[in-house]
Image 1 (cartoon, rainbow, N blue to C red):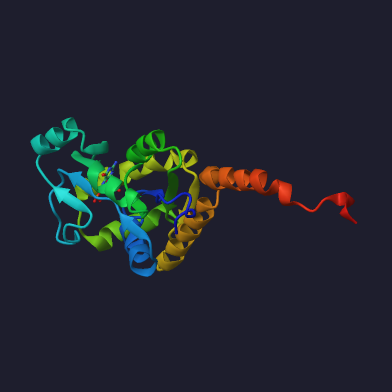
Image 2 (cartoon, protein in one colour):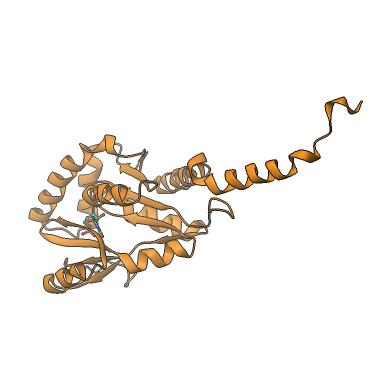
Length: 223
Ligand code: 5GP
């Protein structure tokens, strides 16, 4: 789903939202169901969890390595979340964009705002639950966090929700309805690809062709 042949670069789609809202599930569903999407890759100092998909979403490292990669310029944006560092790996993202893929970035609010500054055309989507208690239920069911970490994540969630108005779109991920959320996000990406601002090249070529073919118009006085 690229803009058009005049605008072959893919779109950047940032999906943020509180821990436990189901960002990972929705992103995985989009990747499985729709063509033309890929996901950005992050470097993190968080320890690997059993349910982390194999080397798809994260590359794990220690703090020194993270800082070194940042100083070398390979980290596009970064954040500290729950005492761990996370950052988008620049080289992976640029490769996908150049291939014309729509890149889904599953990152926190901090990172979302950094991306918007770097790429004003990025689409910022805020994924929210129906109600706050859904987050608690999902985090409990997931069983990846101890009580202390769960509290940190819920506190972060409260903070993150206050950035609601910084986002371009909001999608609600109701329990058991991840496919609907995925479909809505794909719809947003499609609509955004048709924005006039993304078709300046096309417009310019159309004007040029009008100017060069204008003399071929039938003359009003021909009748
Ligand atoms: P988790 O530990 O649950 O995998 O991720 C914790 C938080 O960090 C989530 O909100 C997740 O979206 C965010 N996150 C993951 N990777 C990145 C990244 O590269 N940059 C930023 N800014 N946030 C990230």
